[in-house]
Length: 131
Image 1 (cartoon, rainbow, N blue to C red):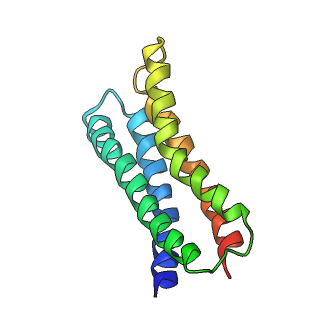
Image 2 (cartoon, rainbow, N blue to C red):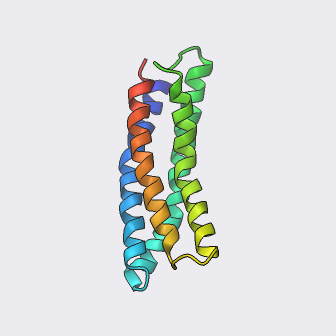
């Protein structure tokens, strides 16, 4: 049961990451228009939502691990931590870049790249996690 929850939540991460990446890129491209500002507000919430989704998936995975089942490769655990950090860390780097005189709205470009990296991490997680 917990394995099914972990797998289901994990399979949601990739489409969410793709959506966040596309919306973030749109927020960057249209940053001076109403659409860009609306996308920016959605992306700010999506960063938190993506991290929450990954935390819940990690919690289910932790219960599986505590129960005695290990992932196919131990790298699965490292990829999980990297996946959790990808989008929030890229958002923080983007905010920092803006504060240092970067282009207005550039944080959304950073978030887009972080979410795109999360897609790759999710692929690796599916390859290393199956028992």
